[in-house]
Length: 133
Image (cartoon, rainbow, N blue to C red; front, side, top):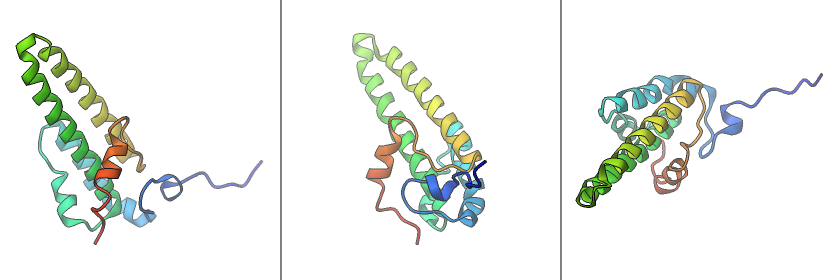
């Protein structure tokens, strides 16, 4: 039997290295980002403005990307109402947003800093300049 330690957030986290203390301190903010995103409350703005915790900031950037995905998707669906496919696109955006939000919430609860499927890597690239102060 091997005495290897299982990977932790520090071993598997993309982006900046996060200390276990950072993860514990930012977990509540990270969870609230996704929970309040269900209610269309942009709580993710608070960690983005404060920028004092890497874990909360990481999930806030993921939520910001999720919000941009939804806004742009619904705008496209609104324009395409003219040719009758808008409602189907809006339904797809809703289902994808809900699924991404649930995945992000599960990652935050399990103290993992993993990007959301499809859109998460864009958040890491586009918002790489937003760092902890």
